[in-house]
Image 1: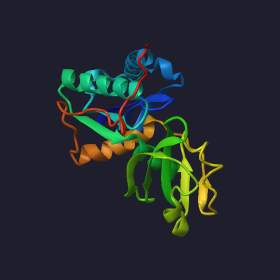
Image 2 (image 1 turned 180 degrees about the vertical axis):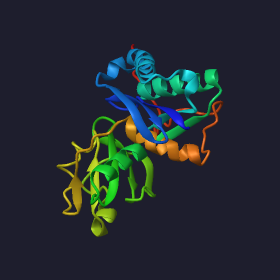
Image 3 (image 1 turned 90 degrees about the vertical axis):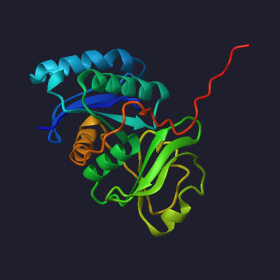
Length: 223
């Protein structure tokens, strides 16, 4: 039995799921981004209690490793690593963008190429492009969007854009082959991908695991 705790605190809405053999047993979410850290551990405790499982029943913990919110990524990764160390179970990490692309494919079967976008402020987004079978076409990058963005792909392919970063891009990316879609994204989709990684024994080393920030964190120093 592969019982996996799935944690996603990378974006505005955090969510957790408990999955068995890839099937979601329970799902919980938090829409207040500033409260992800205080919400996470009590939510996990409540979920485990309500499903009748203990933490020692887990076979692995999965977490979205990024890109996403710097603070959110640290919160999720620290929790996942802590559980894995304490329980001596493997850690599974997955790209936030790949989980979003998987959710889009499941909800929009005719979406064509998949372009998840996470808002990175101003006209910048964290993004990648996947084929419908989730093979990566363009690797994860931080991109400043203009009218020429994705022009080569859009010349020959239908590309569906979605996620928090896509809203500001809709007025700019005007090619007829560009579609903007809504998706319902949560940790239940991570639970399916984490089970596939569990079957392939694709684990992340605890000592070297860290969030995939995509770009360096910058802050302003007070004078």
